[in-house]
Image 1 (cartoon, each protein chain N blue to C red):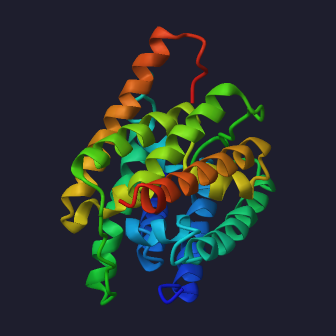
Image 2 (image 1 turned 30 degrees about the vertical axis):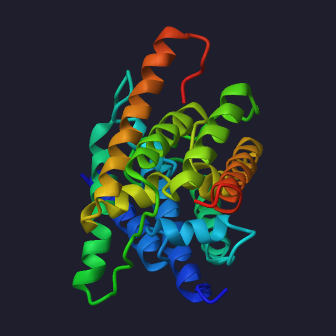
Length: 144
Length: 141
């Protein structure tokens, strides 16, 4: 139960961060990605505070034997830059640049009555299921 | 740069960082949105409850912010519905193949000093910047 409450609170904080910073607006995000246009550096300022605070969390977490609400930490073990990582990042960047939505903002915007957020989130889910299907057919693609 | 909002961006980033720190210290998990969502539709689903709780919190956040008197930014999408579908498919497939998105690689990965996440972040940022340059300045969309 504590784990569920912590996850809910964490999701709430994440969504609030995206809302307060206006990152739920794809036009705001595209303003950052459009270096040749009317450039808006705001997204860099989001990262500039998010990354150090998250880093402090990881450092504090590592001082503990276990997380507060579950038996163990689940840190991604792999640190190799392989082909799926490269191809996946390029495909993601292409989709991100086309509309300005990445997964967090698209999901956070679902309650705001914007049809495109639902269309994007639905297509994103289909893409994720598509990945699972491809993974079954191509056993060589490592699990994400 | 009249749209530049450094203060609200920095406060928002602080909240996102707190979220990632809390999910790690509390639940031992990386706050990567594509991973949290993708885990719900994985061929081997496990621990679905915390994922659903996290996503529910995210979706409720702007509504709560509005209830507390905050001004909810209005998301605007200029792209056509066909482009939105294509972008969604690319983001869904790409983030799962590449093991993460802006939150998992750029925020958490860089915070963990992961070489792999640094490479992914550089690649998706560069690709997205190039895509925006082509669609806005070469094709004039």
